[in-house]
Image (cartoon, rainbow, N blue to C red):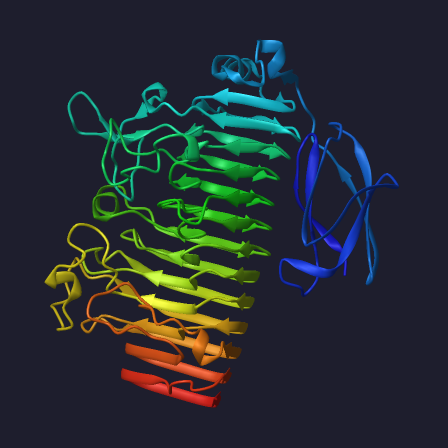
Length: 524
């Protein structure tokens, strides 16, 4: 089938196999570089490192479909700086923050800061323009556990005459003081963080996961925070044990997160995998995520940021990924006040996440909180209890259970009313479904514009294995188990070629659906 270049660095590259498989193939591919076998893998997205800069490599991928070959030229490199030459110990005991920070500060444009194998105890490291941070295989950046040693990013900094403001820290969609992250970039461009090493937040040995709703000095940090950055690539590395969200691109352009392995314990609080917020052109490719909250959560802030610093999230591509433990595989919301458009999810595997595609908003997010252009296709969901959910009554925030958010009465449409446009799901296989295939609930005053579902096969677990749960987080809504589909307050629902199999499957409900088209729907 062939392969294509995804990203090329001075000391490595990433390729993507061109096939119809999701995330991985049944048969492993062999990757040869200059006729030497360097990797054998089933995965579709493949990273190769430990190469030389400014060099031509003959790359060959061999699998049952044949042999594909390309020449790949690595990028030039101005300088290679080994952090040990700057005094880093890499023994996991001594604090290596100053040594590594010095190497970053000294690195020339186009240069590489090289972190060899070892465990480097660090506090936040601040990136800069036009460098590569290369974590070699066996290299671990290990987070300091004492929060008092972390610098703080202020939520807002005002000009002397108070007519301008700049946002640095962010916490759950608001501009609030937040501890800096182990990898922090503010206004950085042309940055690459690559290799086979690990960024480990070490949160299991700290108090980051204790009393998480209490602000202590400042709000918890992410593990990677990119604020107003441009042209950033993370590739190959492992990211684990994050204090809060693992990777948080914020008001960024052109961020690529490729062939990563992101892992947090399933019971760790608010440890989302990747949260692009108010970003344009985000690529999430070939990445495995298993975390304690949503695997990917696409956001655009709360009301203040949408009013004062409006920036809609646009063009998010998720491809050839694998989502494991998590509340949702790919989630949109709920901090969504700036709106989200053009999210494309394809060729991905969802395994044992609570929900697959999860869209959540609520009254109060504002009239700019419009979600549109959501297309999800060519996916496998296995053991996902609720593959598709749309919830306009999400009970987050201190007022989440208030009558204003939760009432089923139609309220006046005003500047606080969010909206959802067209959502499309197609070419989807769901196995071992437990609770409900689709649960979609719009606002009575502003219906969801449309949901299209085409070419879907769903099989439920046997009745004795179904545990009733709340499919969407809203008040006064029944638990479900074995429900085929539920739609309420939707302008248009189109269902074509959908098969839902299993014993004692409840019939679909269509409540306040203005236009319903059903063709080749089979249940039972």
